Length: 251
Image 1 (cartoon, rainbow, N blue to C red):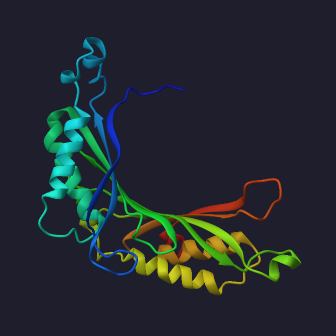
Image 2 (image 1 turned 90 degrees about the vertical axis):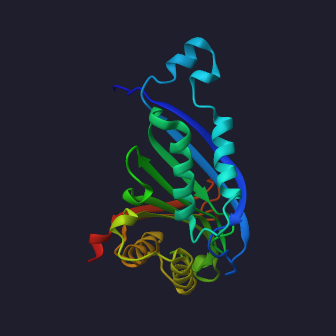
C-alpha cells in the first residue's frame, strides 16, 4: 500500500466563548465553543523546518490560535449558527497561511447545543480557492443517551435500558442548499420517536433514525447512525449496530 506525503499543522480544541445560535435551552447567549483547525499544507512543505529546526520556516500554530481567537472575540454580532463560525475561522486560517496551504479543515464543537447529547459539531474542509459555502459539511450529534424499551429477551420487555446514539449527517455544500437545517429541532423529533419506540431489534431502531434523518431535508445527502446498548452483555462494554444510507434509499 502506497502512502501519500502529507503535511498538516493543527491546533486542537481551542476553547472560546461566543454566541452561536441558541443553546440547548433555546437561549441566545454566549456558550462554550471548542474549535479545532487543521492546515493541510503543500506536500513536503514542512521539510524546511524539519531540516533547519526553525519555526519561522513553518506556520506558527501560536499565531494561528491567536488569529482565530482574536477574530472571534472581536466580532460584534452573534454567529447565527455553527456554520458561520466555521466560515469565519476558515477565512482567518487562509489569511494567516497564504499560499502554503492546500486546504483548511475546521471543526466547531458546541457541548451545550443539544439537550441530552454530549456534544454537537460541524466540520468543513475547504480547498484553496473555494469558500466554505462551496464545501460539504459533516454534522455530528455525539452520545445522545436515552432510556429505550428494546430487546428480544423477556426481561428487556419489562424495563427501559440506556441506549447511546451517535448520528452523523452528511450535508450538501451550503451554496446548493434549498434552506437551512434546524438540527436541534430535528434531534428533538428523533428523541421523541425514540421515547415512543418498542422495537425488538437495534437494527430496526437504527434504520428508522437513519430514515428520519435522511428525509428531514433535501440538503442532507446521507446519514450514519451508530447505537450501543451498554447493558446488553455481561462481559462486553457494549453491543451495537451502525448503518449508513444515502437519502435516495428512502425516496
